[in-house]
Image 1 (cartoon, rainbow, N blue to C red):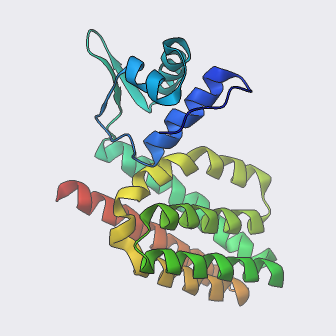
Image 2: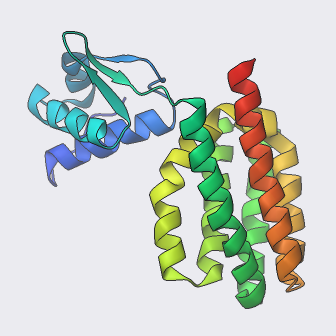
Image 3: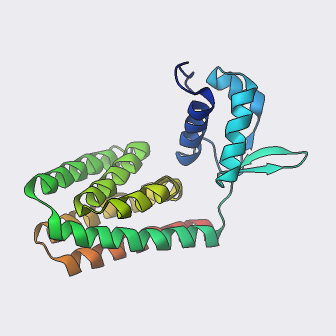
Length: 215
């Protein structure tokens, strides 16, 4: 765990550092978060850690239990289902708009991200694959050209990464095959096909998450 540099509001930077550790699952769901240990790892006092944990609790990332302390939240099946359902709606509309608006530079950018993602999967680099998956979807959102849609997607993006990380290896190469199909549909300006493929793609991730939870 890296030490934090001093500049900037410390509690905000501690919050960001802890949120990143949670979303990448370096801190696992259900894990006990000990203030003194986190403070030591991050090279700060306990006060900004306490403030960050309170904020993370408010946002649903951390559970504060009386007389027990702080724990990384364990998402329920229903929470995951609701979030991934909303993600499908946002991403499907983004794919439709991207098919309507994308230019050749945008297509090239998607193809490059896809190639990098395929390399990450081949190297079994899950963290890189998860990050590239997020960048691929963010690029489609950018190409859609709807600022409000992008803002809504950004709000759920971190939680999506949190749910996607455990199934990234399982989805693996198939996920990027589906990405390739989306690029073709967007390049062909086929709005209906792009929408359908994105809906199926996000539904596969949701099914994989639930299957893993039950196994």
